[in-house]
Every structure is written in C-alpha cells, then in structure tokens.
Image (cartoon, rainbow, N blue to C red; front, side, top):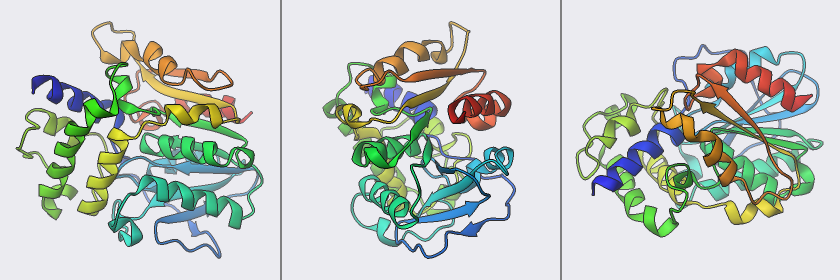
Length: 300
C-alpha cells in the first residue's frame, strides 16, 4: 500500500498537474465555423499555424504567457477540453475522454484546413499531441511535448505496466468522484480513502483549475493508464521533448534525463531533448525565459 501511495504521489506531482488558474485573460476569438461538443478552440495572430494543448484540469489560460511572446509570429490555435475549468462538459461527460478529444483535434486540423501545423502539448496535452501525430502523421509538421510521457508511470518506475497502475488509477478515479464541487475548485485537501499523503500532491499541484467531477475523474484515470509507447513508431514528425530538470541529486528531477529518453526510445527518428533547469511540472510558468528559448529552437 505504501508503494502505491508513493507512486501516485510522484505521478500526480510531476506528471498530472493542471495549468495555472490565475493567469490574466486576453483577447481571444473562437475559431470560426468550428463547433465541437468536446473541445473549444481559440485563435489569435497570423503566420504559420501552431496548436497548443493544455494538461489535466487546465484550459487555454495556461498558454497565455507563451502566446503573448509568440504574438505576430504564429497563428495560434489554443485548445481547451470541455469539462475543465469553467467549461461545461458536453460529450466528455460520458465515456472515455482522451481518444475522443484527440479525434476532435484532428477534425479541427482538417476542417480549418491547417497546413501541417506545429503542435505543442503539456502533460495530458502531450499525450493528446502524440496521439494526433500518430493517427495523422501526414498532417503534423513537428511536435513538442512538455513534461509529458507516452506512459506517465514509466517516469516513476520504468518497468511499470498498465496492470500495475490500474488499481491505483481506480482509487484516484473514486477519490475525484467523492469530492464535492467546492472541493474540486479549491484543490481539495482531504480526500481520505487509500490515498493518504498522496492527496496533497494530486489536488494541490500548481494551478489545478478544477472542473466537472466526472470529466476530471475519467481523464485522470486515462492519463494514468494509457500507454502510447507502441504508437511512437507511427509518428513521422520530428519530436522535441521538454521537461523540468534539477542538478540537485536529492531531487527526483535529477533523474529526468534517463527517464524521458527511455520513454521516447521507440520513436523512428530520435527526439530532441530539452531539459529546463529549475522547472518543475509547469515548465512554461516556472522558467518562462528558458522555455521560450526551447520553443524558439523548436519553431526555427
């Protein structure tokens, strides 16, 4: 049981956190002509197309700082998942979430007639980006994942399997279902059940925006149990992997190099790895200048 708690704490703290909820709003326009019961897409600017996808319990707000720095250089398409933050859940209230959301991103690329956009995804958004690039390899020019893994448990234990994690994911699913709406919005502290000390790591992670209980529970379960490593050989676009790193040997982040390289080992084209010293999970907020330098290298 203690091992399960430690795994969940590490997963939640380093791989499953949502986006920043205190970011200032900006001037955004809903993508013209596109309607979806699963995602909302906002557009801004002009230039080559760039899609940005946020993580669990996060909306497009997490990318506003990055978007401001890219103003005038790119036409940005910012995806928000219905059921996260203040967005009504729509079709995400029923059944699986991640596969269907990835399908809607692919549909947006096709219907908006985007010409081989670049794609950046944070955390759960990184998994979505990997799935889009694997399912539609000819439609994506390049791909960046930000503190995301094709199988998040491998960042804690490289030998972990879906079978190992599934019981833990079930507990996390039930815990989110157990919380009331106020607790979800307030990053609830007292989850109880079997989570023990892992509750703080899961619900007090930086920037948890909350959302619909069912959508959050289902998405968390899927992020913990989806293993996309077998899909990596289908990705033909060049991949850049960005992650937080620490030179402090006592920090779990000091092991990030080997863990992320191992996670992406089956890509047909070796990935470019960009470690951002001093960043934790919210790389683009923890170290915005260093993150933007990596983005600029990715886009050039």
